[in-house]
Length: 268
Image (cartoon, rainbow, N blue to C red; front, side, top):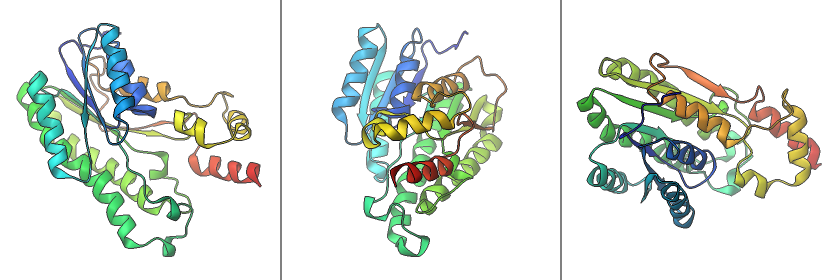
């Protein structure tokens, strides 16, 4: 597949771990692609990914990004533009989780401040970043944007009200970008992962949970970060000429609420 990503700059937010890391490594293998990733806390992890891409002959850089800080968003974009003069592909992948003490709580137990924090960082952060990046795509009459949502945008569960709300909002955000920027050959899509076996998941959940999760998938194989990353890579490439405004599930036909129920049963 000719991705047409040579001399293109790709910016992946939240690229130091999980799906973002897998996406960075996938793009980094494309000849001539220039990969910028952002990190919030894990600078060491981000630097390691950059070194991996460079060691294989690719171009890469890491920038600090706090989605809740407008100045930080501007500075991250400025650093990339200073280095490579453009941003051609944007993957809005970064997510900041709410306080642990409210996870699994009921709607009435979660204060409005938690909603405000999650929506400001995760939704408004992606909106602000996209506002800064789109002009460079429009100027070149080419661009690709992928907003990484979650299957919780459609199938919520206890304690995920704010998260589900902001993730579903990304779908509407995608629709708006399609309406305004398709004429400039800027294609925008939303990707919805479900239960994915990231490094974090392997660390947090016991072995029993991972064995149970395998059985839940029709393929008997848990979704890997690379499965989501490869979908993102296609959507952002020149090989994609007409997939635009779509909401694409990469779930292996298993939803997060279902997996949550299964895990609760397993851990009782």
